[in-house]
Length: 372
Image (tube, rainbow, N blue to C red; front, side):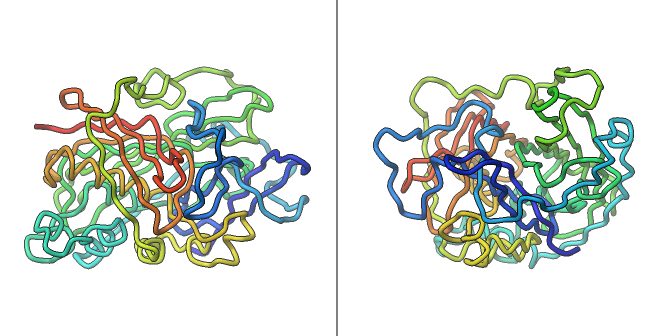
């Protein structure tokens, strides 16, 4: 599948409704938004008095700016979001085979192996007794950018990837074949001019045994699709629902912190795991999107946070890592250092991640479940 465009509608001083055209890779999972006050290049310090922590709802803070046509076509003008059609969208099962080389490549893209004599990291990047990182499940059996299909009725150029969660039912095998089975689990109409929330759920099933490996949920904020005449403002009751209150970060100081540096070429390595979006490789594309340099994939940042939890709270034992959920806040530039702040409360780890160099929160309202 080729590249796709994700266009973000933003308000900026001196410009009205500027659009940032951001190509989407084949996984359709790139997080590319940035709040205007966070639009600083790599290594640029935060300005005195600037806002450092995004508001509670990260989806409303995601912004971008780029030069693009104002009249770019993005949906059939005669169509609106079709609630019943979208809720019953017929996703085909996706078969995804991966090898030990794919598993090692994913771990290298996340930053494992930075210390070549650390045997705890070596097991994720060396085929002898190889183990897969728990967060690798987020890149498998992707349906691509399906919301661009005309029959969805979705204003696809204004959609944002707002949240992601994963629950592991068993450790990820280091190689194998999985079947991805995806569905739209709910759609919430926030009202006219307020957008809609589209919830999807994907099960990863081991083809050989039929066992359920992982359950993944994702929230898409469809900013141009509110008011489609179904129950508006109806909230889901699930604790994993982004329409519920976000997982609260404790008010006390963090119990633990973990600083992990990213390589300057991190995005160039990570993109080989499936998301070939040029925004993460081509400086020209990045500049047109309003960034000083190519940015790191959002799901790579998620992987770095997962690494921090695995290292700090699980002693690198992937069998102890059970689940993770978070909200995206802002992008990372390759080469920056990500500090993950962690709060331990029995088997629940609350966390958020920030870039040290710019003092910017990039992941927020994080919650992970581990075992002792």
